Length: 212
Image (tube, rainbow, N blue to C red):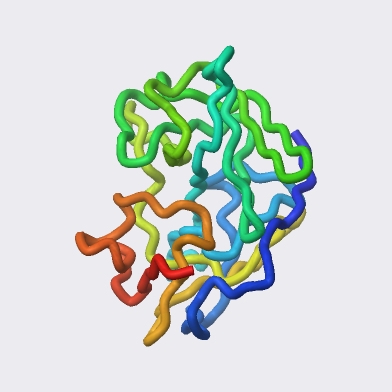
């Protein structure tokens, strides 16, 4: 499925100051995920960088803004001026911080609808207990089980548009004395944070703030 996405990133910065960027350059790991040309990966997206392959995987998350009262398989996802979700048909999703069960049993996205600032997905089966305000996350296969993609050790610095060929992507190594505005980016599940909730679990040099 080919989709053309619009960026919903606003003009306010997502960091309190200029972070340190991992030097050397990386490319998006397209083989590990499901992307279409012209998909937009928003600034501040959780990322897993691999220093050896020089590739970056991204972690897809979104907050549910509405569950269709007549069909719980239809979810409207939150969009604001800073970001929009970038799921694709075929992605499997579960509630963040409640990932369990087999990969085969995880709900899969069968349809993505984008109209203006409305972003709606249809699943092949409902997510048990899903409700407005819940965060969903893409899951991958680990053995026979569903699992989160991994622990983020970076975030994207700016919007990245997926190209037909290699897609260059910059990620942050260290926010230094600054921090990422957590409320201006796609949801960051608790499983990705340290016990204080103020840093990435896999990289304590990336600081988070809930200030607006």
